[in-house]
Length: 397
Image 1 (cartoon, rainbow, N blue to C red):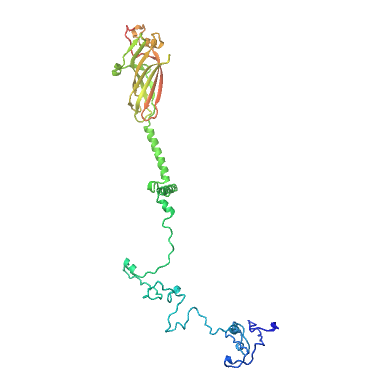
Image 2 (image 1 turned 90 degrees about the horizontal axis):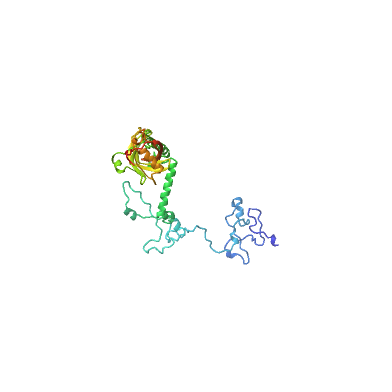
């Protein structure tokens, strides 16, 4: 039966070997292989190498004693002469007197001829020539551009270069980009100053702590300066015996003195004596101007105005000033209460048996414009039994 026949390589691990009876030819005579009888099978020649040759006895390699396991060259077709295995080179072909053969590894290990000589000139050698190592430079020798150009240069692989300009770099070259860079620098400096790392205005000592003390000291000094130089509104008081006096000088000549019945009116110049209290001021008190208004409170009629120009008063004193007044009133007739009251107060003292003229009541309002103050200040006083500053002739009206 077919399954009773055992293969010549039946046991790979050196077990009991089987013999093919049909192919077993005992006693093969030595000699030429062509002397075998026709129809006789050629004996199988066992390979001298076995996978487990060290585990077998030498008799296992004997053709007469049986077949060995492993590679059996006789089981393949006889293709004639077999070439030995080699790593891409043939030592016999490279013997002396034979031309140098092509090596596929020559372009990679820098040994042997190059694969292609299409771009090489006919006079040059097609073999690879290794570049000799450069000699170290001697002490004191300065390498110049000519030395570097004449010396052999070996190129190396370098990474590919990226774009020359990045988008951020191109933006920084524009006006808006430069503005953003400056703003970022200002913000960075401001944050560093807030953290106390740098000083203000390029200094190291002008830190936030120093600025706080500096502002505190500046406020203190400013408060002291204002306390000394800031003017105070003075207090005003009037002479109780003669608050109004007759005008003199050029002002008296500028305003005519009149007291008529038809039409009923009167006008005359006068000075208002006012005492100013400057004790609250440290430095002299300067006035731009003082405006005055005179009212008759009984009829609530304005009967006079006045103005005093720029002047200065000493500090810590009680100086007296005279504000020039123009007393002037126009009545509808000589029975007007205001005209009658002022006519009786200004008549000659000879017309009265007692020699005392009656006084009048009035209200004086002053508006002061003081140097150093942003707004004007006002002061008023109610005066009663004020004597008339003028006296009419005995035979007048």
